[in-house]
Amino acid sequence: MIRSERTGRVRRGAVAAGSAAALMLTACGGGGADGGEEESEPGVVAGRVCHGLFAGDEGKALRTTLGAETFAQSADDESAGDAARRLAAEPMDDGAWREQRICSVHKGPQAGIADLTVTVERVRPAVADATHSGPGVARYVVGHGAWADVNKAVVYVDCLSPKVAGADGTSPAVLAVSAWNRTFPQGDVVKYQEANLVLAHAGAVALAKELSCKDNGGLTDKPTMQQAPAG
Image 1 (cartoon, rainbow, N blue to C red):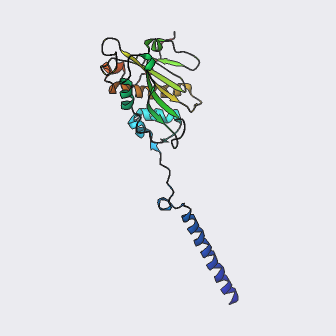
Image 2 (cartoon, rainbow, N blue to C red):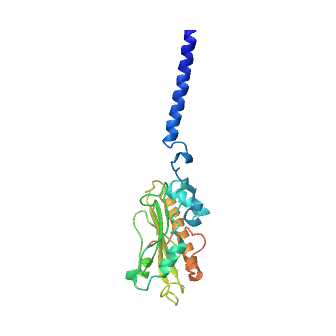
Image 3 (cartoon, one colour):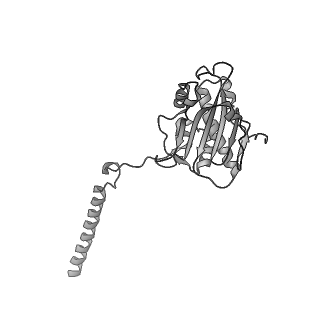
């Protein structure tokens, strides 16, 4: 009888201890939305970041470049439309030309430098005409010209448009659309070159449409992977 009462007291003590522990966890905010702790924002798939800039095959390129399946949501004030409006407001003076951000992508919660950034900048024609070469660099027959390595790709676009200062006649504005990858991928060089090119091309196509560039700036909906002759 004594053993039974003692056993009952031990069991009741264990239940009370467990209940107290549960109450402490709830008070510390470990129990979800009602506990006062904000849950981390879930990631989004590639096709939803940057206002759908990387929908379709471009989403595969983003996953390849960053080595991730989901990403943090993009800032609301970054889009091809926002970049186009800022670029269109720039004067003809090349000293006033600034790099405009089209899109930034984080693999985790937004903090610090983005893992991928897509930008546009108006440049002098000589910049696009320069020979872009070096170890690990491939040049492509895309737009006015393009090049890529494992960390970056640039697509140059000739844009004749009344929306761009000085580009409404016969001399187009030359735009450099860049995709910067800061994850330093290792492995198949060609795979990462082409993935970066696809991302930069997606930004270039979106921008050309926003600016109403004649003939879409010479860009097709999808980039060709034809490399330019050496030299």
